[in-house]
Image 1 (cartoon, rainbow, N blue to C red):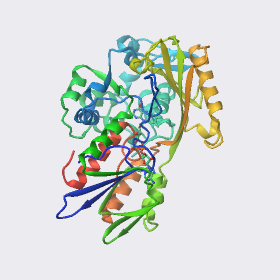
Image 2 (tube, rainbow, N blue to C red):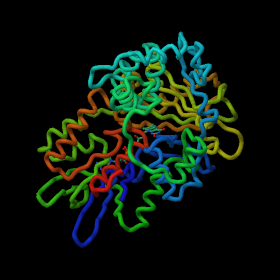
Image 3 (cartoon, rainbow, N blue to C red):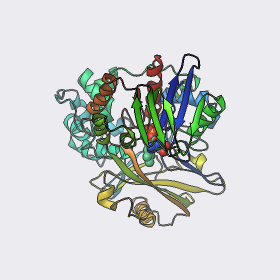
Image 4 (cartoon, rainbow, N blue to C red):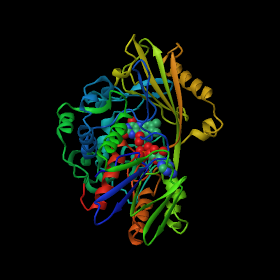
Length: 469
Ligand SMILES: Cc1cc2nc3c(=O)[nH]c(=O)nc-3n(C[C@H](O)[C@H](O)[C@H](O)COP(=O)(O)OP(=O)(O)OC[C@H]3O[C@@H](n4cnc5c(N)ncnc54)[C@H](O)[C@@H]3O)c2cc1C
């Protein structure tokens, strides 16, 4: 059995006669959590959460193996490394778009907004001494190894694009473990990339994952939007008859006694031998018994950020450049994280009749409160106006969008701040020491990407069943 993503709480009951009873509890009316797609009646698709999944490495293969098992191969929309969306990524710095350096030329020559060739930073990196701290902010780590300019512009923007977070607070050890491990095991990021930087989960790539390697995919989506993945998973589980699925089932309170867990819902109580929680950390902390104070405190210390996701559709082909999109460093505009040019990687999601351009503007994140105030008081009109004004200023688009949708994604991305690894280790050792029948999965602990949360569910389930990834 593997535990899928975004299914908040999975309870397991073992008995000598019945093999395994699995119950899945989800508080909202739909499964999928942040995997959330609007399919308009004309066929256009707009994503309000993730829009592209990386196929590479064991965690990427694991997801593709599941996609194949679910029979979704024909739904896959791959984007190869040779596609313009993979080759062209932009930064908006000093009121201008700059293509991120790529290829040999981009490394050897000085490419604005950078003031010297990247090759210089890369060549010097090999000689930089290993850090002595157990953890370090992403910004400090990259400044130390590759220089302040790269940290201020490229890494600051990257952290805003991936975590909607502040590179000066995020932990390199938890957010980019491959960078941390490259320094620890090889003494250098360059050598780590060339020689490998540590152990990875053991996943055998199936035929679809192998195809992604042969065809050199950089990312993929699904024809009907990424929400069709959790929909296919829940359809499969419902048809298998082996899992009880409950929507509109908010976990209110968890009580543990010698006979196991009692899970209190709004309208009843369920018993379970073991719980795999993929709830957001704060939701789990408020459901746990108050006697688990240590665990509750650690869970509450994992903060999250709110992101305003504004989908815009324009008539015609309005982009001045082609590429995946552009990111904006915090020094340029604190509230505007970046703009994704969705129509470039996934033109299949455009409306079928007539030419159109779909963009997504991401705003807020770690700067939400500072720029927009509380999520409760900001209006959709204000967020829409800020997004369309940014498109006009950054891309020179003077037309108004012909369709838009504002989604205020509250507390949607956990922030792995400095010391996150200690917090997670401390929670897991508390659970082990106290023999709690509880496993932690989901985006609050070991990685926020869709691939990471899927493998975290699988690792939790296999750990429990004594198999292993
Ligand atoms: C705007 C945005 C863009 C992103 N882009 C990408 C991307 O392009 N690629 C990528 O790989 N990743 C991306 N991510 C990250 C990724 O989508 C998420 O980290 C991942 O989907 C989180 O999955 P999860 O199951 O851990 O948590 P969630 O999706 O938060 O699921 C938790 C579930 O728990 C339920 N729940 C909450 N409280 C209770 C309760 N008390 N009882 C029962 N159920 C409860 C919720 O309703 C929810 O369904 C993005 C995230 C966001 C927000």
